[in-house]
Image 1 (tube, rainbow, N blue to C red):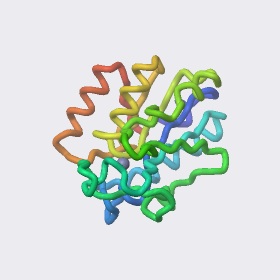
Image 2: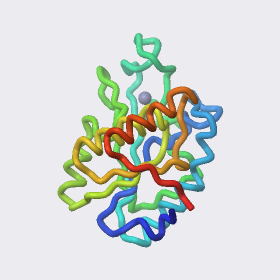
Image 3: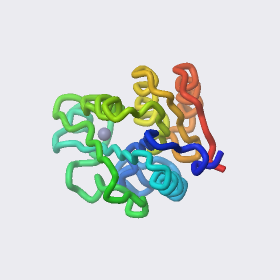
Length: 190
Ligand SMILES: [Zn+2]
């Protein structure tokens, strides 16, 4: 499906955690994570033309975050605030109109979903947004939880299959099933 024909004014394109640390060679790499960047750029351009919102979430941890292995968490240290690893991929064509949502900023709690502890739902509601188009990283972690929350909050939720990649090939199909069960629709970019 062509993003140019799908996106409408008052939709939101929600780009999840397209940050250097999640790219091949980064601290917590997602295989082929960089491949989604040109796909997302097409969606960004289409959103801009349609007058839709462009929202980019970022994993934005303080040092000594609870999710890091040194603190007993499951992940290597990643996306520490203001480090190069936490920056958006330099090829991602985010303009000044982009709304940036920082998540995982609490020392004592992790956040996989862009909705968790961010107030994003209220932002979208007060602007009349009802439809979401979601891509980014990783399909089986933060995209999954963002999509599930979007469905739970009652948004018409679409996730863009070729604009995301899973951390692990095993959990990707399971995440896909979970998103379908929650009512999200998958879309492929033409
Ligand atoms: Zn994190």
